[in-house]
Length: 286
Image 1 (cartoon, rainbow, N blue to C red):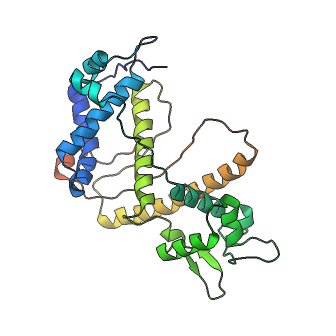
Image 2 (tube, rainbow, N blue to C red; image 1 turned 180 degrees about the horizontal axis):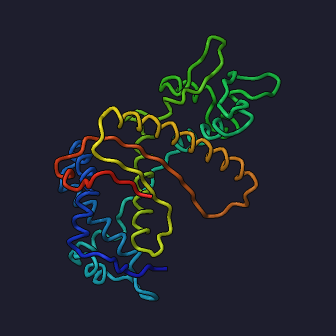
Image 3 (cartoon, one colour; image 1 turned 60 degrees about the vertical axis):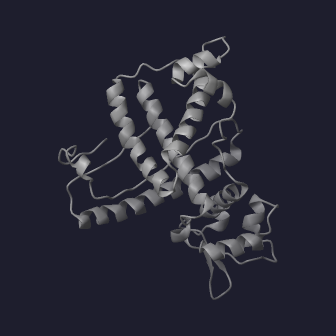
């Protein structure tokens, strides 16, 4: 079912200003990666066509090249040439998915956690059927040998092997390095989901999604660092708690098409000159 065009409560000039601020970090990423304006505009052209075709069709009418051209401002010949060529935005690889599921189980399943809900050290194998790194991996997948997972995680610092030969999860190293495919995946998924929630909150009244932030300006670097550390600790504790609740609840869930995600981000920065004028003292969104 197609979606009607939203009547947003702001002008085109206001939207332009909003997009400038939102797109600035992405343009910075593109330039740092050698992705120039010509390449960027090609992606946008194809995306405009895809979204217009799939989400702005009139009820019970076939979406035509002419209508897409009218909606997007892209020449009809280009629309005809590019329709159906939009790249697949999903690149959730098997490796990323398996890693996430294995870690989620280790962080949430009582079988692999201690009395304080912390992931326990695991023997590589177990002869009596008890919990082990091998059983942890085998619970999730039979397609990859546990030793292959262990070797990869050791190389990336996700786990260490202690003096007893047991495998310990290194929580501080779960975040992948900048060149890792997992980080690129989570950048895309998390940013897309946050933007999607924000856009839907703008386009609907009342806003359907919970989206809140606390932000203060004009503070010392020392205080910013202190708050950053507290936020990281509290945020991680919340995510671990939610993971445990979801991991237990989904066992008895009948299943369906719904997807749920909850995320936390913490940022500290020196305000840019062009943003200083916007700071109106101490602020807090509730």
